[in-house]
Image 1: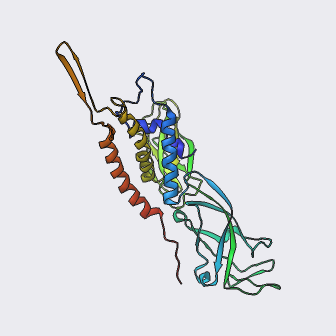
Image 2 (image 1 turned 90 degrees about the vertical axis):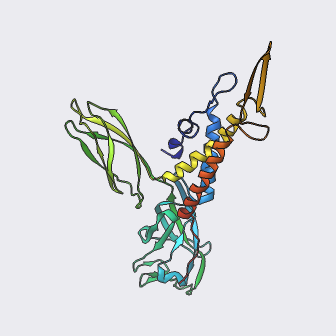
Image 3 (image 1 turned 180 degrees about the vertical axis):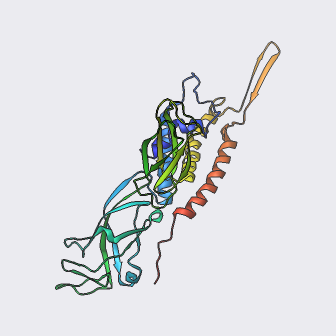
Length: 321
Protein backbone atom coordinates (compact mmCIF):
# COMPACT_ATOMS: atom_id res chain seq x y z
CA UNK A 1 0.00 0.00 0.00
CA UNK A 2 1.17 3.55 -0.76
CA UNK A 3 0.02 7.17 -0.73
CA UNK A 4 -1.64 6.83 -4.16
CA UNK A 5 -3.87 4.11 -2.74
CA UNK A 6 -5.23 6.70 -0.30
CA UNK A 7 -5.42 9.61 -2.74
CA UNK A 8 -7.13 8.31 -5.88
CA UNK A 9 -8.99 10.01 -8.74
CA UNK A 10 -12.25 8.81 -7.20
CA UNK A 11 -11.28 10.33 -3.84
CA UNK A 12 -10.76 13.74 -5.51
CA UNK A 13 -14.08 13.42 -7.39
CA UNK A 14 -15.97 12.48 -4.21
CA UNK A 15 -14.52 15.29 -2.11
CA UNK A 16 -12.82 18.34 -3.56
CA UNK A 17 -14.68 18.50 -6.90
CA UNK A 18 -17.99 17.19 -5.57
CA UNK A 19 -20.97 18.68 -7.43
CA UNK A 20 -18.96 19.58 -10.52
CA UNK A 21 -20.07 18.26 -13.91
CA UNK A 22 -17.08 16.14 -14.92
CA UNK A 23 -18.19 15.34 -18.47
CA UNK A 24 -17.08 16.60 -21.87
CA UNK A 25 -19.44 18.07 -24.48
CA UNK A 26 -20.11 14.61 -25.93
CA UNK A 27 -21.12 13.28 -22.50
CA UNK A 28 -18.00 11.21 -21.91
CA UNK A 29 -16.38 11.53 -18.46
CA UNK A 30 -13.11 13.31 -17.90
CA UNK A 31 -10.28 10.76 -18.17
CA UNK A 32 -8.72 9.57 -14.90
CA UNK A 33 -5.29 10.48 -16.25
CA UNK A 34 -6.20 14.14 -15.65
CA UNK A 35 -6.69 13.48 -11.94
CA UNK A 36 -3.74 11.08 -11.72
CA UNK A 37 -1.38 13.70 -13.13
CA UNK A 38 -2.75 16.31 -10.72
CA UNK A 39 -2.29 13.94 -7.77
CA UNK A 40 1.27 13.07 -8.83
CA UNK A 41 2.13 16.76 -9.17
CA UNK A 42 0.69 17.53 -5.72
CA UNK A 43 2.58 14.67 -4.07
CA UNK A 44 5.87 15.62 -5.74
CA UNK A 45 5.42 19.28 -4.81
CA UNK A 46 4.82 18.46 -1.15
CA UNK A 47 7.81 16.11 -1.03
CA UNK A 48 10.08 18.84 -2.42
CA UNK A 49 8.56 21.65 -0.37
CA UNK A 50 8.62 19.82 2.98
CA UNK A 51 11.59 17.50 2.40
CA UNK A 52 9.57 14.38 3.14
CA UNK A 53 9.00 11.02 1.46
CA UNK A 54 5.49 9.54 1.42
CA UNK A 55 6.09 6.01 0.18
CA UNK A 56 8.77 3.75 1.72
CA UNK A 57 12.13 4.70 0.21
CA UNK A 58 15.38 2.79 0.79
CA UNK A 59 18.61 4.81 0.93
CA UNK A 60 22.04 3.20 0.60
CA UNK A 61 25.38 4.77 1.44
CA UNK A 62 24.33 8.24 2.59
CA UNK A 63 27.41 9.91 4.07
CA UNK A 64 27.69 12.46 6.87
CA UNK A 65 30.61 14.36 8.35
CA UNK A 66 32.01 13.81 11.84
CA UNK A 67 32.97 16.77 14.02
CA UNK A 68 34.75 16.33 17.30
CA UNK A 69 32.66 19.05 18.94
CA UNK A 70 29.58 16.90 18.41
CA UNK A 71 30.89 14.01 20.48
CA UNK A 72 29.39 15.30 23.74
CA UNK A 73 25.97 15.31 22.05
CA UNK A 74 26.42 11.75 20.71
CA UNK A 75 26.92 12.85 17.12
CA UNK A 76 23.53 14.22 16.07
CA UNK A 77 22.88 14.60 12.37
CA UNK A 78 19.87 14.75 10.08
CA UNK A 79 19.33 12.26 7.32
CA UNK A 80 18.34 13.59 3.92
CA UNK A 81 15.00 11.78 3.64
CA UNK A 82 12.30 11.75 6.30
CA UNK A 83 10.39 10.57 8.21
CA UNK A 84 12.87 7.85 9.11
CA UNK A 85 11.33 4.39 9.49
CA UNK A 86 14.47 2.43 10.32
CA UNK A 87 18.27 2.57 10.21
CA UNK A 88 19.43 -0.57 8.41
CA UNK A 89 23.24 -0.27 8.46
CA UNK A 90 25.90 2.01 9.93
CA UNK A 91 29.53 2.26 8.83
CA UNK A 92 32.57 4.51 9.17
CA UNK A 93 35.41 5.21 6.78
CA UNK A 94 38.07 7.73 5.77
CA UNK A 95 37.73 8.92 2.19
CA UNK A 96 37.38 5.86 -0.06
CA UNK A 97 39.06 3.43 2.33
CA UNK A 98 37.26 0.15 3.07
CA UNK A 99 34.30 0.72 5.35
CA UNK A 100 34.08 -0.64 8.87
CA UNK A 101 30.74 -1.92 10.08
CA UNK A 102 29.33 -0.46 13.27
CA UNK A 103 26.54 -2.02 15.32
CA UNK A 104 23.33 -0.67 13.82
CA UNK A 105 21.87 -0.53 17.31
CA UNK A 106 24.11 2.44 18.05
CA UNK A 107 22.01 4.58 15.71
CA UNK A 108 19.11 5.90 17.79
CA UNK A 109 16.16 7.32 15.84
CA UNK A 110 15.63 10.28 18.16
CA UNK A 111 13.34 12.36 15.92
CA UNK A 112 11.92 10.33 13.04
CA UNK A 113 9.73 13.15 11.78
CA UNK A 114 12.75 15.39 11.20
CA UNK A 115 15.16 12.65 10.19
CA UNK A 116 17.47 13.10 13.19
CA UNK A 117 19.48 10.24 14.61
CA UNK A 118 22.11 10.12 17.34
CA UNK A 119 24.98 7.67 17.73
CA UNK A 120 25.17 6.23 21.22
CA UNK A 121 27.90 3.57 21.13
CA UNK A 122 29.24 1.17 23.74
CA UNK A 123 32.95 0.59 24.38
CA UNK A 124 34.12 -1.66 21.55
CA UNK A 125 37.00 -2.02 19.12
CA UNK A 126 36.27 -2.35 15.40
CA UNK A 127 39.37 -3.11 13.35
CA UNK A 128 41.74 -0.14 13.54
CA UNK A 129 38.92 2.08 14.82
CA UNK A 130 38.96 2.40 18.59
CA UNK A 131 35.99 3.59 20.64
CA UNK A 132 36.84 4.93 24.06
CA UNK A 133 34.32 5.86 26.77
CA UNK A 134 31.46 5.30 24.37
CA UNK A 135 32.60 8.10 22.03
CA UNK A 136 33.95 7.23 18.57
CA UNK A 137 37.37 8.78 18.01
CA UNK A 138 39.74 7.84 15.23
CA UNK A 139 42.88 6.02 16.41
CA UNK A 140 45.05 3.23 15.06
CA UNK A 141 48.47 2.42 13.72
CA UNK A 142 48.23 4.54 10.58
CA UNK A 143 45.76 7.25 11.59
CA UNK A 144 45.96 10.03 14.11
CA UNK A 145 42.99 11.66 15.85
CA UNK A 146 41.17 14.31 13.81
CA UNK A 147 38.69 17.00 14.82
CA UNK A 148 36.80 16.88 11.53
CA UNK A 149 36.38 14.02 9.05
CA UNK A 150 34.21 14.62 5.95
CA UNK A 151 31.92 11.75 5.01
CA UNK A 152 33.02 9.71 8.04
CA UNK A 153 29.64 8.09 8.73
CA UNK A 154 27.77 6.04 6.13
CA UNK A 155 24.11 5.22 6.78
CA UNK A 156 21.68 2.84 5.08
CA UNK A 157 18.09 3.51 6.09
CA UNK A 158 14.44 3.44 5.05
CA UNK A 159 12.27 6.54 5.05
CA UNK A 160 8.58 7.16 4.43
CA UNK A 161 5.29 6.83 6.24
CA UNK A 162 3.92 3.53 7.53
CA UNK A 163 1.11 1.75 5.68
CA UNK A 164 -0.47 -1.43 7.08
CA UNK A 165 -3.38 -3.49 5.76
CA UNK A 166 -4.97 -6.36 7.62
CA UNK A 167 -8.12 -8.04 8.91
CA UNK A 168 -9.51 -8.39 12.39
CA UNK A 169 -12.00 -10.99 13.58
CA UNK A 170 -14.49 -10.24 16.34
CA UNK A 171 -15.74 -13.56 17.75
CA UNK A 172 -19.45 -14.27 17.88
CA UNK A 173 -20.97 -12.71 20.97
CA UNK A 174 -18.12 -10.23 21.50
CA UNK A 175 -18.36 -6.45 20.93
CA UNK A 176 -14.70 -5.39 20.89
CA UNK A 177 -11.24 -6.54 19.92
CA UNK A 178 -7.73 -5.22 20.56
CA UNK A 179 -5.54 -5.42 17.45
CA UNK A 180 -1.74 -5.34 17.96
CA UNK A 181 0.48 -3.14 15.78
CA UNK A 182 3.73 -4.98 15.15
CA UNK A 183 5.40 -2.25 13.06
CA UNK A 184 6.94 0.56 15.16
CA UNK A 185 5.11 3.85 14.57
CA UNK A 186 7.79 6.06 16.16
CA UNK A 187 5.30 7.85 18.39
CA UNK A 188 3.05 8.98 15.51
CA UNK A 189 -0.73 8.84 15.92
CA UNK A 190 -2.11 6.52 13.21
CA UNK A 191 -5.21 6.96 11.07
CA UNK A 192 -7.28 3.77 10.85
CA UNK A 193 -10.08 3.12 8.35
CA UNK A 194 -12.39 0.13 8.77
CA UNK A 195 -14.41 -1.89 6.26
CA UNK A 196 -16.82 -4.64 7.35
CA UNK A 197 -16.10 -7.67 5.16
CA UNK A 198 -18.46 -10.16 6.82
CA UNK A 199 -20.96 -8.73 9.31
CA UNK A 200 -22.54 -11.97 10.60
CA UNK A 201 -25.23 -9.86 12.26
CA UNK A 202 -22.83 -7.29 13.72
CA UNK A 203 -22.94 -3.56 12.95
CA UNK A 204 -21.42 -0.20 13.82
CA UNK A 205 -17.70 -0.97 13.65
CA UNK A 206 -15.45 1.86 14.76
CA UNK A 207 -12.04 2.48 16.31
CA UNK A 208 -12.60 3.14 19.98
CA UNK A 209 -8.99 3.76 21.02
CA UNK A 210 -5.57 3.66 19.41
CA UNK A 211 -1.92 3.83 20.37
CA UNK A 212 1.50 3.19 18.88
CA UNK A 213 1.35 -0.54 19.67
CA UNK A 214 -2.35 -1.44 19.32
CA UNK A 215 -5.85 -0.19 18.58
CA UNK A 216 -9.28 -1.32 19.71
CA UNK A 217 -12.24 -1.98 17.43
CA UNK A 218 -15.72 -1.93 18.92
CA UNK A 219 -19.16 -2.59 17.41
CA UNK A 220 -22.55 -1.28 18.49
CA UNK A 221 -24.07 -4.74 18.05
CA UNK A 222 -22.01 -7.90 18.19
CA UNK A 223 -22.10 -10.70 15.61
CA UNK A 224 -24.68 -13.35 16.38
CA UNK A 225 -24.43 -15.81 13.48
CA UNK A 226 -20.66 -16.25 13.33
CA UNK A 227 -17.41 -14.34 13.59
CA UNK A 228 -17.40 -10.78 12.24
CA UNK A 229 -14.54 -10.00 9.84
CA UNK A 230 -13.35 -6.40 9.54
CA UNK A 231 -10.69 -5.15 7.17
CA UNK A 232 -8.53 -2.23 8.26
CA UNK A 233 -6.09 0.17 6.66
CA UNK A 234 -3.67 1.90 9.01
CA UNK A 235 -1.31 4.69 8.00
CA UNK A 236 0.71 7.46 9.64
CA UNK A 237 0.27 10.13 6.96
CA UNK A 238 -0.68 13.39 8.64
CA UNK A 239 -4.34 14.28 7.84
CA UNK A 240 -3.14 17.79 7.00
CA UNK A 241 -0.88 16.30 4.31
CA UNK A 242 -3.84 14.45 2.79
CA UNK A 243 -5.83 17.68 2.81
CA UNK A 244 -2.98 19.55 1.14
CA UNK A 245 -2.73 16.92 -1.60
CA UNK A 246 -6.50 17.05 -2.14
CA UNK A 247 -6.63 20.84 -2.37
CA UNK A 248 -3.63 21.02 -4.67
CA UNK A 249 -4.76 18.15 -6.90
CA UNK A 250 -8.24 19.68 -7.34
CA UNK A 251 -6.97 22.96 -8.79
CA UNK A 252 -6.09 21.70 -12.28
CA UNK A 253 -9.38 19.80 -12.89
CA UNK A 254 -11.42 22.76 -11.58
CA UNK A 255 -9.53 25.13 -13.85
CA UNK A 256 -10.24 22.97 -16.91
CA UNK A 257 -13.88 22.26 -16.02
CA UNK A 258 -14.56 25.93 -15.30
CA UNK A 259 -13.06 26.98 -18.61
CA UNK A 260 -15.41 24.65 -20.51
CA UNK A 261 -18.71 25.46 -18.76
CA UNK A 262 -19.99 27.37 -21.79
CA UNK A 263 -17.04 26.86 -24.09
CA UNK A 264 -13.45 28.04 -23.86
CA UNK A 265 -13.37 31.79 -23.24
CA UNK A 266 -17.20 32.13 -23.40
CA UNK A 267 -18.87 33.94 -20.52
CA UNK A 268 -22.28 34.65 -22.05
CA UNK A 269 -24.39 33.65 -25.04
CA UNK A 270 -27.93 34.37 -26.29
CA UNK A 271 -30.41 32.59 -28.54
CA UNK A 272 -33.33 34.35 -30.24
CA UNK A 273 -36.21 32.87 -32.30
CA UNK A 274 -39.25 34.89 -33.48
CA UNK A 275 -38.99 37.46 -30.74
CA UNK A 276 -38.18 34.95 -28.00
CA UNK A 277 -34.74 35.19 -26.52
CA UNK A 278 -32.76 33.20 -24.00
CA UNK A 279 -29.59 34.49 -22.42
CA UNK A 280 -27.16 32.55 -20.26
CA UNK A 281 -24.30 34.18 -18.38
CA UNK A 282 -21.59 32.40 -16.41
CA UNK A 283 -18.77 33.51 -14.21
CA UNK A 284 -16.34 32.36 -16.89
CA UNK A 285 -14.57 34.86 -19.11
CA UNK A 286 -11.65 35.00 -21.46
CA UNK A 287 -9.29 35.24 -18.49
CA UNK A 288 -11.23 33.66 -15.60
CA UNK A 289 -12.45 30.08 -15.19
CA UNK A 290 -16.02 29.36 -14.19
CA UNK A 291 -15.00 27.88 -10.85
CA UNK A 292 -12.65 30.73 -10.07
CA UNK A 293 -14.27 31.40 -6.68
CA UNK A 294 -13.74 27.82 -5.55
CA UNK A 295 -10.18 27.87 -6.88
CA UNK A 296 -9.43 31.05 -4.92
CA UNK A 297 -10.96 29.49 -1.81
CA UNK A 298 -8.86 26.34 -2.21
CA UNK A 299 -5.72 28.42 -2.74
CA UNK A 300 -6.39 30.32 0.50
CA UNK A 301 -7.05 27.09 2.41
CA UNK A 302 -3.91 25.54 0.93
CA UNK A 303 -1.84 28.52 2.03
CA UNK A 304 -3.00 28.05 5.65
CA UNK A 305 -2.44 24.29 5.57
CA UNK A 306 1.05 24.65 4.08
CA UNK A 307 2.04 27.17 6.75
CA UNK A 308 1.15 24.63 9.44
CA UNK A 309 2.94 21.80 7.61
CA UNK A 310 6.11 23.85 7.11
CA UNK A 311 6.15 24.62 10.82
CA UNK A 312 5.85 20.91 11.61
CA UNK A 313 8.17 19.29 9.07
CA UNK A 314 10.76 21.83 7.99
CA UNK A 315 13.68 22.27 10.37
CA UNK A 316 16.78 24.42 10.34
CA UNK A 317 19.90 22.30 10.04
CA UNK A 318 22.08 23.88 12.70
CA UNK A 319 23.76 22.70 15.85
CA UNK A 320 25.76 24.34 18.60
CA UNK A 321 27.67 23.02 21.57
